Image 1 (cartoon, rainbow, N blue to C red):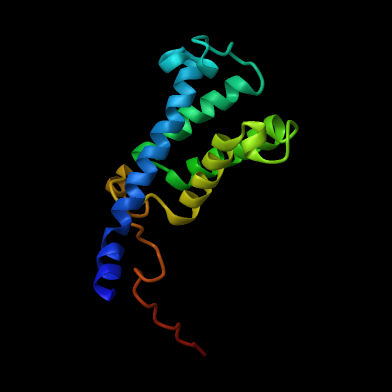
Image 2 (spheres, one colour; image 1 turned 180 degrees about the vertical axis):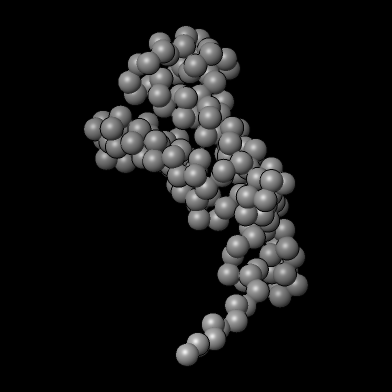
Length: 158
C-alpha cells in the first residue's frame, strides 16, 4: 500500500494540473457561449447576452477571462479566487432564492465551479502551467511547506 501511495503522490501535481485545465476550459466555454453565441449560446438559446447587462454580461466576461487564465495556469490563484467569488454570487443571488438545495434550484454547476476554483486558490496550479515558465511560483506547487528548504534562524545582533 505504501508503494501505491508513493506513486499517487508523484502523480499529484499532474492530476492537479489536468483538473485545472479541464475546469478552466469548461468555465471559459460558459463565457464564450454567453458572449459570442458559440457552443449553443447563452443558456443553450443560441443567443448572446447584451453588452453591459448586469450581472450576466459581467459574469460571462469573468468566466471567459478567469477560465482562460486558469486553463493556461497564468495567475491561477487570483483568477480562481475571482471565479470562485463570482460563482458564489451566482449561487446565492440567482439560485438560492428558488430552493434550498442545488439539486432543487438548478445551482449545481455554480456550486461545483465555486468549490473547484476555491480548491485551486489553495493548491495552486499544479503541473503543466505556463505561470511556471515565467517564474510565477512554479508550476508544480513550489512554495508548499514540504518543498521549501528550511530557513536558518536569524542571528541576534547586539
